[in-house]
Image (cartoon, rainbow, N blue to C red):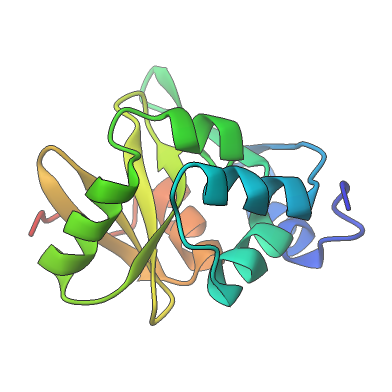
Length: 153
């Protein structure tokens, strides 16, 4: 499974943001991706597997002011990010009061992209949490357009 024809969710997102963002879709081996998460100490849930099947190994870049900004679901980059540890994921979940999964990183600061059990996408980092939107597609649209509540909690 490695191109957008096999992952229609990515194609829908690409169509929705045509001209506003660039997309890199890399080959996805779902079993290898799940193995990497498990080896790093994360629970591989059906929700994580479904997310990876739909959006795994995707990098979206766009211009913000004079800089290029990105969000990525690259498994390798996600698991190597500064704040990406199973312990931090448990802390994030406890502070939020709901289960969350680490599914990506955003920006140069490597904010953790979290998928909550209710489908919300949040950013987590040193400054706290920000809710971006319900669903990954809506969250990427909000990030690219800048139309999201930037309040930290």
